[in-house]
Picture 1 (cartoon, rainbow, N blue to C red):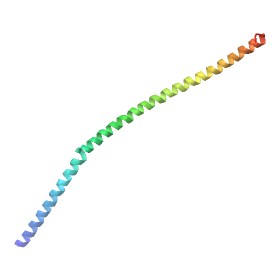
Picture 2: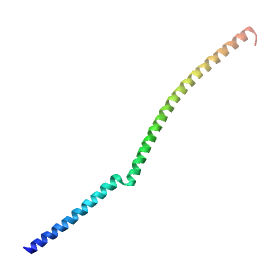
Picture 3: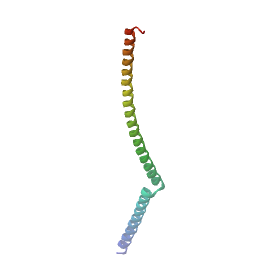
Picture 4: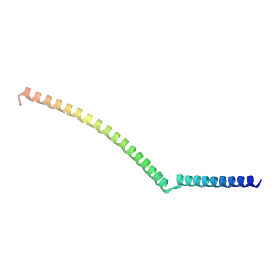
Length: 101
């Protein structure tokens, strides 16, 4: 019986050692996973990049709006230019018909 007892005690001690080792490893992994300086720095970098992306999107939308306004203004200027050219042509024809030119 003593031999069986020693064997069981040895197995129990070995199992206890393995369990403690596994628990320690798990604690290290959890600690490294969430609280490590590397992970904290990466989270800060993610936050910074997210804010930067948001700022770029705001800027892009602003540029799109401004571009739309400028295109509309350009179209108006082109139409005014065409009207003025027709007006000048019309006045030239009148001067020519009167013999002023």
